[in-house]
Image (cartoon, rainbow, N blue to C red; front, side):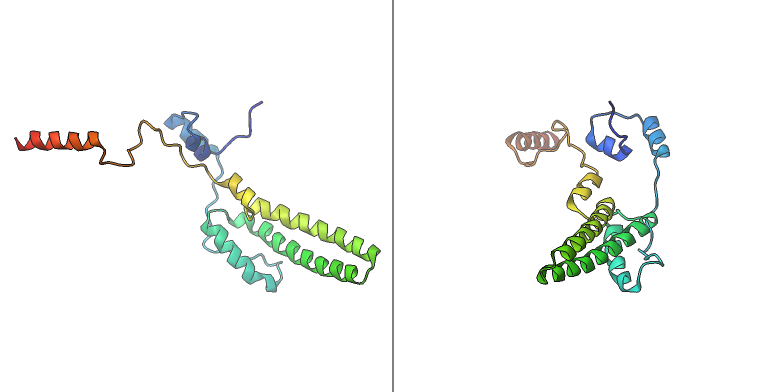
Length: 170
């Protein structure tokens, strides 16, 4: 069973499949490319108290190439779910301190729901290490035969340069 279709940049970077220029152009024409915005602008429905943090994280994501204008709502939902998770966490902690087992169970359930929502938004935006690893295009593997030697001053290169210099000078 074939795997999920990968972007052209990933296929080329892996180096396992040769694409002609026509195939590359055809694949690139079929891919959706969304230009990055000039600035990360929070959605209007997001509370004002979360705007500054939205702009900070949005700029980091934008600079990394992981943010487009279409991602605005998902990032806003992340901040909202995280804020609600923090409130539920405080209520659960208060119920635990008061030894109210029933109330603590209810609030930890609510807390778990908001945590799942925040984590899902974070993973879709690349805010976790594992999600960034899935997003990053792997570096092209350098062919060992075509790679330049790390030390240009090996014995063979030195002798070759000396012979070339002697031939040009003599």
